[in-house]
Image (cartoon, rainbow, N blue to C red; front, side, top):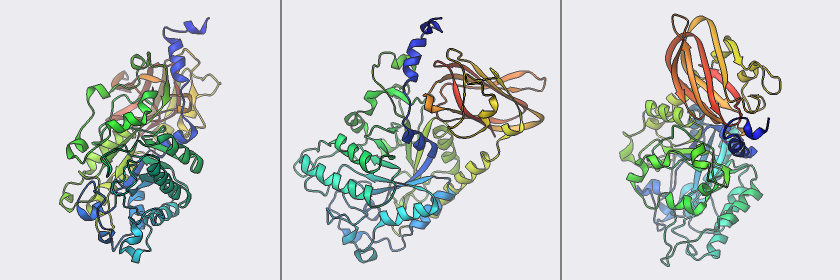
Length: 482
């Protein structure tokens, strides 16, 4: 049979599945959930966005303990931390050789402090990844908005961060771009910034105004019900990303959710007329408080465990990574109110997904063998090194679990082998009722790196996942029942 006739639309599906992630993008997605540390002079002024005129003399977190930040992250279930090494105000948390507007002219440790060093060392010791946020907008630097002179300055600082502090897992490029002292905006040389990152930290992913990881489109923790990682290349245009990013300090922007026109970025219908496609997975960035920086008046407005749990399940469980901000206070410590909610989330993750009931079930997979002759047992092994893939054109797949005794089920976890692209379009979930009949309890669309399907405490002796549609053929990496 001509491969173009395997099913209607097969040729287009082949085109879509040719788009696959780079190894660094797979590694980033496997981290799943990590933390943001917003900390600078804003912590001491009460602002969200500094104006660049703040005196370094106000910066003196007398009890700062990077180990406490890391311990908080580890107990909260995080796999890494990203630090705002320089926010829009231009104040540097390391003793940069290229500006006096830095920690070296603050009272902190008598001007000998280096918070980038402290946190990167603490992360490394605890086995966490370390990432850097370096705002392209700098409201203190006089060369800002002059073109190449400022790009030189920015590249010099980026080079300091990427050569002096060990391995960096991500470089977070914010899209904010305001006017400089001359009333003009800087035209950022994004390609030059990318080249520096690729050369100095080739395994690092570039987020936001970059080619590797996509901003989810809001700061409220909102997610799409169908999140595709294969999207039109135009979504990675840095200037487009910047134009849609926050351009002024606005609580309304921080609380704004996705609108209907933002919901579908990667369906067959959307991509059919898009010539250039890329792998561009989404990241959900959200703060545990209303603001990104610490404000004392928000101590009673910390997100509850239930809210964090919902965000986690819909982001990590909806083919996104989750970046949760936990801002230290003026003492340089993360508050107990924040830690309490975060620790409950960490406990929930460990307790909910620690025991895979699929390993205790009788497993039946249809078809019985995949295209390489492997049986369904590979679906119980975590990791990208194993997978179960149907022959091309066979778009349906069933994975059935049965137990001798009734089990109370909370979650089904399904993962695609994304090295072969994102393929699943539709799935259904069934459980056995008291009469031994299969009853549908859930249905969904995309899977991607991970889909966590809520099972609502279903009491049953059997659970079945049915993939009803996929691009070319489904290729699964893992299934788990919890």
